[in-house]
Image (cartoon, rainbow, N blue to C red; front, side):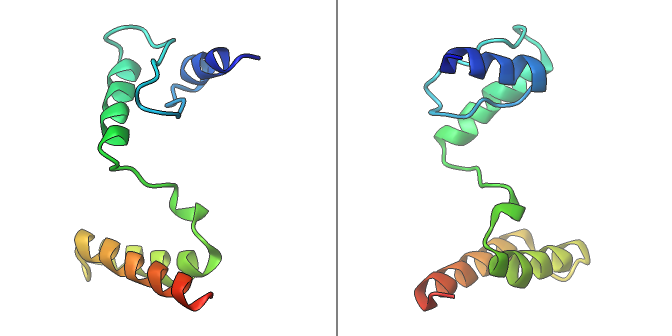
Length: 100
C-alpha cells in the first residue's frame, strides 16, 4: 500500500495524526471537522518541535524512576509542570551520560 494511502487511512479510520514531516498534507479529514482542526493544530505543534513521545515509550529506568514519580507528584500538587519536565530531562541526560 502506498504511503499516501496509509496516511489517509490513519486519519479516516483512527482520526489520528498520520505522522511524518509537518509539510505533508493530511488527506481524509472532512474540512472543518473536529478531526481536521485537531490535525491542523498537530502540524503546528510538530513544526514548533513541541511534541514528545508517549511516556511509556521511555526507557525502563526513566519511566520507573523519573516519569512515574514526577507525574505522581504533579497530580498530588507537590510539583509544578515545568519542574517535572526539567527533572525528567536532567534524569535522562544523567542516564545517557552514565550509560544506565
